[in-house]
Length: 183
Image 1 (tube, one colour):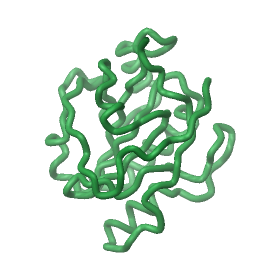
Image 2 (tube, one colour; image 1 turned 180 degrees about the vertical axis):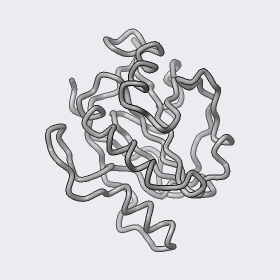
Image 3 (cartoon, rainbow, N blue to C red; image 1 turned 90 degrees about the vertical axis):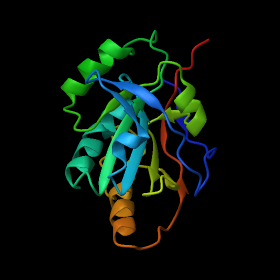
Image 4 (spheres, rainbow, N blue to C red; image 1 turned 45 degrees about the horizontal axis):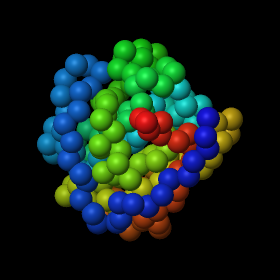
C-alpha cells in the first residue's frame, strides 16, 4: 500500500472527459448513459485498497440517499489488472460482496484515469448537469481506514448543489492507495 493524496489536474468547471467502459454487469457505459442525472460522482476505486474498503459502504449509502435523476455514482477501476486482487473477475466479486448499487467500470487501458488526473483510490470527482467539475475530493472526513466519519463531505456538497447553494471548496484532497499503473 502506497498512501497517496489526490492532485488537482482536472480543474473546476472543466468538462468531464468522456469514456466508454465495460461494467461488472457486462454492459458498456459512457457519460451519455447518465445524462438524466443532475449530478454525477465519478470515483476511482479498486478491489484491494483498505481506504476503498473502508469507504465503499459510505458510497453505497450515499447513492441510496438520492434519486438517480438527482445524483449518480459511477465507480471506475483503473488499476493494473495483473496486480493482486485486481482485474475484471475480481471487480465482479467485489461488486457482489459490497452490494454496489451503482456501475463499477473497468478502465483496463488506464486512459480514463489519466484523462481525469486520478492518482489514488478512492479519488472522487463531482460534476454538475453540464458535466463540469464542481468538486474533487474527500467522501467524508475519515482520512484513515480505521476512522469513523463524522462529516459526510460529499453528501453535504451534493445537497448544497441540489439546493442551489455554493460549495465551500472545489478541491479537498482525498487520501488512499496509489493507482497501480502498468509498467
